[in-house]
Image (cartoon, rainbow, N blue to C red; front, side, top):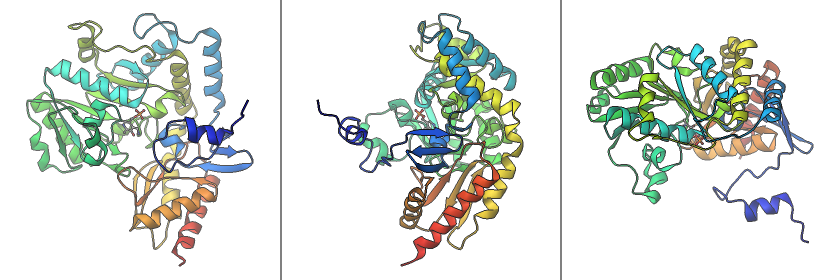
Length: 398
Ligand code: PMP
């Protein structure tokens, strides 16, 4: 029998998403580090905002193992009472404002966005959506319809009709929200645009407009949730509440999990007309919910959010260089802006070779993404910034 290497199997049999995957074979990961056999990488992207508690977190692993010993999948979502789901939903409701007290569990971010879109249509009996230019809400066809960049969507048309796009933080364009709009989708800190926070004025104006028109305001906190910005949810930095909160990525504590959360009165429309209006087999998988609850408890019990601002300040103070134009973002969701994308790419590649895993953004190839695990320590931040600065200087050499 022919024994292929993992590398050749990856390239020959695992469907590829581009011609240039990182293709590093990670053998194990722990804390803020990933390892390719003996080579160590500092993980400065957390699997794109997922491993907020670091890799192989002992408390999350214990919760997973404990749940595995009790049961894994039992029945499609919504039928049987499964304690990890019930406990997680209750804990989230305690931590969220009273209008966000009902959790619909799914498997991923895209699926949570799909569910939120259907919920908004069903609740408002309207069909149109408003989204922000250069937002990313997922790859499924509904979520993809919310993507303004035709490069990514044109090959997959027809997508959903009736979507309007407005510029982030543009107060005038809010006027396009009217009584035909079912929902407005917003990332409070925009992810793939390159970690650009919304202004308070913008979110307040969106809230007021949605109140006026009866449209639902939906916050996609798939990247910004579960502590990434220094609050449990990014909307807590603003005095603006969404009608629907969408979570995934870090929410699963490293396991696949998504959710859309609303008030029980909004969510109840999914129960009838049609009955089973949104269903999922694996949504809210008990092992994922156990991991999510353990992650949430770690964030709160270990007071992880108390020093995220300090870590952000340290990054900002160390990352001083003539080539760095600006650092945007909030908490440990930071983007280093360069003048040109070729230079940025050169720095990223050099950092990866030097054992620092960083990357760019879908819509901002001139920026470096910094989204390390929240458990990162001062010494790691010093190492990371040292590697980045060294590679910026090297990239400047002819
Ligand atoms: N919304 C945002 C803000 C995201 O960053 C992502 C994933 N990058 C998604 C939605 C889609 O999530 P998933 O990949 O889990 O479908």
